[in-house]
Length: 334
Ligand code: TRP
Image (cartoon, rainbow, N blue to C red; front, side, top):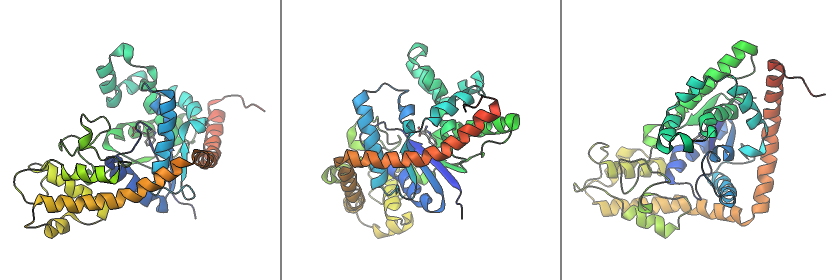
């Protein structure tokens, strides 16, 4: 029986993932890997579009992979690998770049935002072709579904357009993938500033729950989360963003429905509620953190595991690339 294919990836942009990545991506990936033949990559080539210290980039790449595994992505079930280990990504990216319109790439809102923020001279060409590399990631694996956050939807739409364009012009080489957009209830906000998305680049660390935080630190951040003066544990995103965010975290980590949690804490104060949530967070993150640290304790073993998974990815990717090279008319090296 062949399962449909799934592809997703995450940049190695921090030492630790945060609870937003965990709830928004990893928990879903962990469930989806049962029904799908899943490919998950640590997209280190994409990370090069931003300034990086080389030693740090390497360390973050290992740390990100270790956290995927610790969170339940099983390298024996799914293919979990480092993007730069599979040469076909950069190679297919070039072919797809020749099919992408300059204006088309220029309309990507993430590129427009970033280039506006940095200015034209500080904006590198890699940032411009970032979505084309992402399309190559997805199309190499004949992907059926791509689970991503809302901000990546436009990139998956571009991927679809490129796949259809190639297939129409040269004959069918690619499956046309479907984006699966993360639910609003999977979106996590900053604990100190609960109308802003929880982000690695938050102003204050107190608002961000890192997967690798010491459990005592996680508990303290939950206890200090911003709430409101009403005193009732009730979901109301408009008027009670802080409490609503905590309820979403509680529900996501326990698999419970929000109304059942509201009932449990009815008539009790925020102190009780936060204490309950702190226990949930520590109970969930504690073992994940421990497993990640164990994996990072033996980098040689982790690197071997990643190499074995890159070999699995290579097989699929090389077959697609060879077909593409043939179809566009590149002379085969005999
Ligand atoms: N651009 C994605 C992000 O920033 C990461 C990514 C790269 C990705 N390649 C991908 C996601 C392929 C899904 C599929 O979140």
